Image (tube, rainbow, N blue to C red; front, side):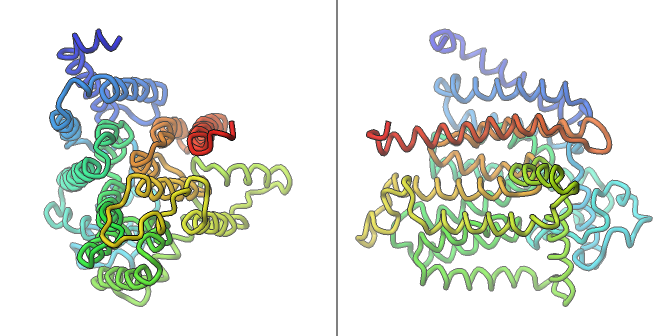
Length: 459
């Protein structure tokens, strides 16, 4: 097979790219999300082409040429109005409030029911949950296109594609052999470029922070620390998720430095909120965050198991009881992963090299990345809502490690779109069980293989 591909790669690659382009255009320009059977068939084709391009054909072509093709695939989607997700309407709503001189953290959409966008919003009774850096982007798009919906969409998409290119550049620096796995991944192209989710912008800032904090020397320079703090703050100001990595970063750079830099990051974070500052924004913002965790349920793992047990024993949904418990459980595991000692941390990050200025070894970097990957995986296993685009962070971090369950999850999570085949949303617990069984099975298999590589006598 490899000999055949080598001889015919000059035409197999273009055909694969054209078929991929047709698949993305079909799904994102024309296919309603209620047509699940067609959707999942195209997704299966796209993932098949993804593995063909990245695993088999890429060895015969220049990597920069292939990255250019990946960017072109994204540009083909420049004028898509997302039909798989309606979150972008809230982005534009918030942006138009800002342009109108109103604080998006102080007004509920249902206060303006006459607005043409109102009927498209999925949570009109909630205050916005998007942090300030997102709001700056939303406001910028609405400032350029105050009345033009497509103009807003295109500008938001350009920003997301630029962030995607930035992620490719950073992966090229951090782990070159993984960059194509990111560039051509269907989840990334569909959920970020297609559906306008800002996880890609968050990942760009977070990987930038990792680059300054981790990818370099044991003794991080003062300048790199400052840049790392700025990038980390911007990632949190895009999505709050990177906060779960803070204990691990503190461990990496040392407790004293970590606390000082945490205060600096908190100060910068507060500065970003100043344009929106009002006494009510804290309560409004966190009340919506709390309602989100307590009220929304989608494609969950641990929570759905507990929910079904609750229905069986008590006869009602126990989300109001267990939501906080799940959060505390996830937090305790995350802290243990960040500061504890486990078998994959045989070479301790803080003691493997002690000489100031000595470069970090690949083993130390791998340890950091693996721990970060397990942290974010734990977080989503305990979450009550796991939309497909949430897995972007798991997938991207997995590319910096030897583990590939993030790639598996990036494909399996797409079956959650089965819930949208009808209105209202109706999930299939059988498909969710299949999704998590495959993902958890892959994790356990990969962890077993890794452990045997470190401790071969335990066979």
